[in-house]
Image (tube, rainbow, N blue to C red):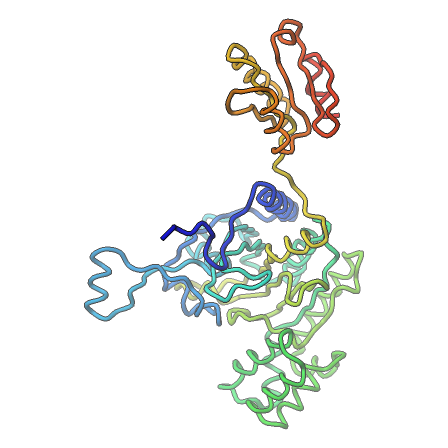
Amino acid sequence: MAIPTTPPSGFRDFLPDAAAVRAHAAEVIAGVYRSFGFQRIATSAFEDLAVLLGKGGGENEKLIFKVMRRGEQLEKAKAAGEELADMGLRFDLTVPLARYYSKYGSTLPHPFKAFQLGPVWRAERAQKGRFREFWQCDADVIGSDAWHCEVEVISALVTAVTRLGVEHPRVLINDRSLVYALLEQAGVEPDRRLAACVILDKLDKLERGQVLAELTALVGEPAARSLEASLLAEAPDLALLRAAAPAAVDRLEKIVAALRALSAKPESFVLQPSLMRGFDYYTGPVFELHHPSLSSSLGGGGRYDRLTEKFGGQPVPACGGSIGFERLLLILEESGQAPGTSAPDAVVTVFSEELRLPSLQLAARLRAAGLAIDVYPGSGKLKAQFKYADQKKAAHCLVLGPDEAAQGLVKVKEMKTGAEEAVKVDELAARLRR
């Protein structure tokens, strides 16, 4: 049987142009995050299972790709009937960040503004815009409970998305403590509140009537009616919300007001009491970015003030957000705005063996001038080398023949038009830039 050449379901290969688009988008996002003062860090793809489990990851903890023990340790685990895995691939970047900060926090600036771009893995069913391996682009502030930290994180995410040419997303904002206060006010028993939150989190997947039916079955009709009037109201009743959780609503109003004051699209920022977010580690404000072309969110995040204490230390206030990179790329591709290219500025041909070194020297000179220059990796007729330049989508093909070399010239061929001209070596970089 032939070995398959297609990657497993939910995993992908990227051809050069697609990889270039991804690299360009990642560079733009990283540049925006740096402009907000976030510093780049990197965490391990693998974590001990003890790190990944029981850290508030909710349903995602059930989707961990586990890694089996090795050698003697595996045999011992089998004999003892113990867990055969001891590590797993990270399912998000927030839990590894909390572990990272718990270890290195004393050597980092305080508060610490961090960003990460990298792959995460979840063993879920693959579908359009949803993969088993995908990238996240996170920005986090650790060590401060100031409300403007949420403003900075949300502003960074929105700026990064719009900098790539995507329509300004609609940003929904809520507070987990407000949700818990309204659940208590409605008379929902403590042991049913988490299940109620899970049901509320289905609002972007199910019809409103279905969500209400599930809530009624869980908490009873009186409580469900109370939640319909508070959490599920078409227009938030601020007086009702403020009565339930005054501190949470005060913080939310400050965040929303600041975001509107800082944005050219103030109407895009909306207080949404029904917004939940799926992770259990959120303790305060939560938010999501929504785009009209997507049925699910483009990104989101929230405050997670108690996550670091899971690692044996003191709780440290923190908030962060993440852009769904694959969904962002899907929007760019479908709108025809995907930036980036793998094409070089020019391909230098190799006219003969005697001119191979001069051709390499010419390429080195142009690279030093800041241009992307490919040298034909072989030998053969110029026709084959021109075809190579065309396949690489190079703007120009450069020919350094014996006559050109003797006169200090290079023949420049425009690949789109086929037009050729001789250019002095000293003027070549400027000519290619034009």
